[in-house]
Image 1 (spheres, rainbow, N blue to C red):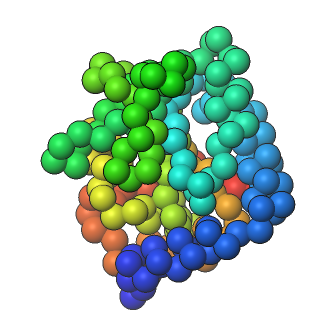
Image 2 (cartoon, rainbow, N blue to C red):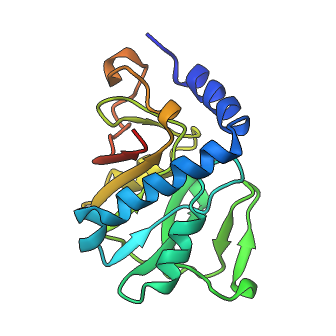
Length: 182
């Protein structure tokens, strides 16, 4: 059985050394697939994560959401006890803060419930289970979430195994849809 911790470290290294031209190419394809999908078209409030430099490049998705007046755009905010909420994206830079994780968050504490969450992670199995960073923020939130979930995944992040081959816990929930360049 493969260990999540080992896969997590391997994927971080792969992401940090990922060729920028290939990253850009795959990002464009994946975001086009997402925005053409029914799950995106029917969503009114979309939660995306604010990526670290080596994570999935959501730049063009953020640009689309910013200009699309039919979609509400929310981002995660971490709270004590490894809890998380989503807040409206703060368009004014003075309303943002950089966390100790190196991620941009809103200063607001007004929670918004999305109907689609773009779930981050490091690796995904064929049956949609993801290996995140190990903090459990998304797992805790998703345990009570009734909307749609999706992930944007570079080709090498999709593992060629099912979740039974990895040491997942009962609280590790699969995402409903995976969008990749494949």
